[in-house]
Image (cartoon, rainbow, N blue to C red; front, top):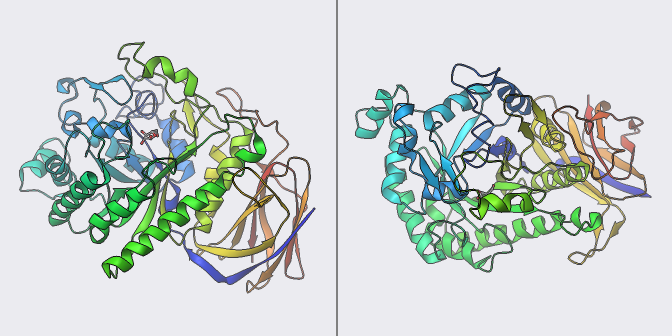
Length: 502
Ligand code: AHR
């Protein structure tokens, strides 16, 4: 089987915002407690943060991390997490039926963010609370001093403001599971007023308004049209969320699901364009895809805690999906979709980062380890920054019940500013056949293969664990550039990244 096409350095889809490769840490399960924070762990730093986790996050080079939720934020009092630790209240977290010790709050998270070299993206509670607490939190975090909340921050040990740029106006406010769920009109008004107050306090911030929590929501996509009608000129991003599953055990259909992601993005891009025209607005609003991942392996295991049968445990194991090789291919396809829509999707957050549907797992008191999906995320984060390029590719495909022609090869192309390298991210969804990729390279000058990494040859259900990580990249072979064409044999069910340098 062959796939023939062209990539041209002048056919630019858009500049990739580095924040496309962000992630998310929620007070949920063991993401924070025994995830990033474990004061008794042998590697714990002076702040009680696990150094082994810090090292893995640094390796991923995560540009931004969303915090503290997620569903958690919709009944969270951020003030519970400031001041002396021993005086902080234990609260019942209604979203995840857990106890929250508040031993980690904004100061501890900010120190951790600094240690891993990432920016914070903070969410305010528009579920159980509203405008007033949102402005207080912003004042605490971003105002230099001389006011009640900023001086309290200084008293609590942080002299300089953190200067957090991105702020989420609540989380998944369309969801019936959300504490303080709202109709689109209720939320649109509240988000508008909150944005007005927050901007009055700090003009430098970027605001993210909630879109649909999934394209399966009955209110999608009218929700976005209504919410943007209220907020278009007051916000910078609309947030979308999507999780992927293979409950049916149907690999072909599972690996085609990024076609649905494509539709979701295209639809909301259309709503944005429509609203911009309706408002006669000059400004653009972009998509912040601030929750996405595979999420299904752990669903049954979580019922006990979520239905309240375990009482209110502190940091129970929740959403601890153990990812397999099939999920590597899925995550590769999702990242490719974001790169191909880099014109409208500017921010992305892999949900989440540690222990909770995460690329990094920890054993309390023991090692931190890399899940299978760590690698496509790592490669995209390292080599997927620059300009997203339009590819023309003629590749055989297959049909699923939701799309007619899913090309077997899912490919994205990025030209990196720093070294001018062209990187191809390739997933072969064909389960039995190698595909000979043959791409004409136009406008790049002379090129060589400078890096070739592949994840292939594993069973679809193969996983990694704390003691061994068999699903990992190795060097690819046989790719070559000749006569301004790159040719490579792409193995069935494989993830491949080929970099062409000068
Ligand atoms: O990431 C897990 C949860 O998924 C988040 O808390 C919520 O926003 C979404 O429904």
